[in-house]
Image 1 (cartoon, rainbow, N blue to C red):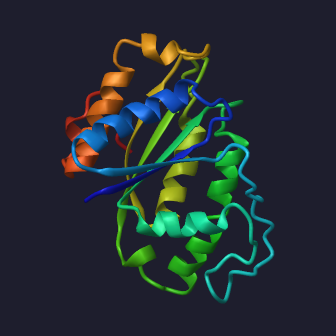
Image 2: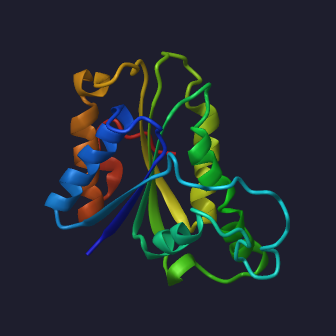
Length: 202
């Protein structure tokens, strides 16, 4: 059974990002996957303090809300990172998760420990923003790419939507929910994601 873990970075519970991730989960579960959503908002995750404590072990020395999430990532077959865009960036709670993957990076590149949990996984990104800016997602896509690399996930693609602001606006988008559901089904069944309409492929 495919285990899909979604990290929800929006501080607005039940908002547009939440709805998009939920649509993916519903269809993935209907196609046999096990899903778990983890809200990052309000979770005590200290950003990386660059202390070097993980340099010899690949294990972060900070003990907080991030500590159990390392095991969640290791167990996952698919990691979904979901965040709205705030000032052309992912949210602060999402960024804290990304920064704390430094310990994973050390384990991979300095200590040569092999893939987390002994396996590679897939990574997908869900995001939306209020503006129609042409460069809205350019910066965050680089951040997400390197996050997935650190946690031994191949960056398979992203669903990205502009002009989504007020609560529930994602439901009025002509294709977003359908695309998220299709993505969930494809992930659950291990299909080639090139068949998912609207998916940005890195």
